[in-house]
Image (tube, rainbow, N blue to C red; front, side, top):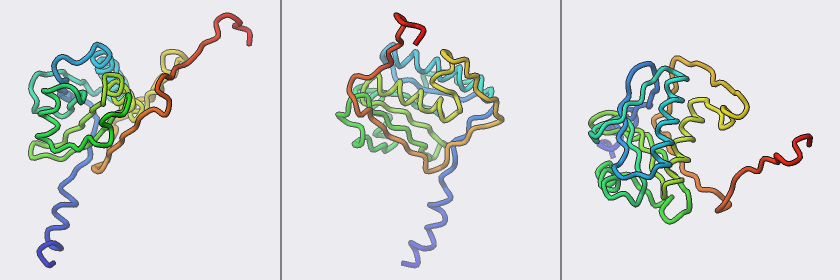
Length: 178
């Protein structure tokens, strides 16, 4: 018991926050990801740049700070297994995603994984929302506030799936005066 108690502070304090701040952050997007995922990565990159001047740089190296993949991507699955990311909470759930701040020997990793392509895209847009970017930013001219940094806590983990399989928004453009 004494050994466990003496190791406890090391385990608790070894995890660190993931910080978006001015500078470059490298992101690995699994090969052969769907167009919607690649579009979401581009939107997320623009959001990070506008909020805190954090430049998300895509790279082919897996030794990066941000990992983006979908469960059915074999290369992504290998990375998730290597990082020991448990994806049971999203497996088989339509458009589900998991976001994890993971401590590794090579530093912090922000892992964004979707059960399918839309789940991965939704996970990326959720991180944009954490940065302070509104989903209505384009439609309602809601310019995000500039910040010096945005921090995701050491134990940050979020997984979600929609309650309704097919969802969307209907804009009544036929009777615009309502």
